[in-house]
Length: 279
Image 1 (cartoon, rainbow, N blue to C red):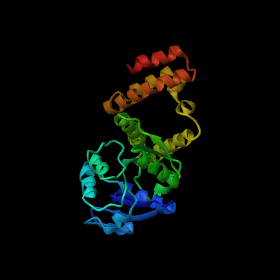
Image 2 (cartoon, rainbow, N blue to C red):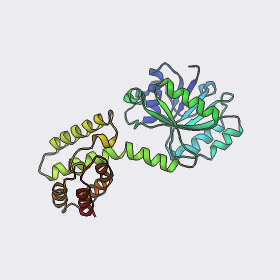
Image 3 (cartoon, rainbow, N blue to C red):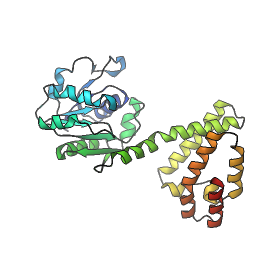
């Protein structure tokens, strides 16, 4: 691939993407951050370096609150002719994009649908993942090319739907950690020590995630909701009655499973009884 990639932002996302591109043999001409990173190899700080002018693609991987100022900084620099500017945010609609477009730079989005919490794992996690893209036609084509280079596929973010798109991404990437924490707390409430509670919740969670590699959600659903087991659900509700936060989470999430139970063929009368209990 002939693209020369400059990454602006040396946080976890920027470093993870840099690692993934380099492992895939892509030419990363620079990674620039706000502060020195001893562990980040060729990362630069301070003023944007001259290597920026040699980049054909600039990936802006800063926090959303810093995005406008980062793009403004780019607009003041000498960029390569026709260099493509891609933001890594999945929710922002930057005003500064218009300025960059007026200066001849295609703009768009390259949003990895992967939680890039650990840069060293990024090459593995991005391989087979989806990248949300939008923008000018040249920017989308560049984003598709970059995605292919790291073994990912792309999906077009529909115009005007970034709120829903990003909410879906947050549900899939952030909420599992919250669910794991809730499960651990519930084990501890039952009298199980914290280390064992963590091990038990984690093993269940990872087994469920492994199942989802092979089947859609409805196909791997187990437990009392899937069976239409009214008595067990009632027992759970009674056990959680003294812990309002856990009870509210249990009820809310259980309601989302009711349509799956109906699809799986659970007794409809029992499913309605469970629905009444949850209400």
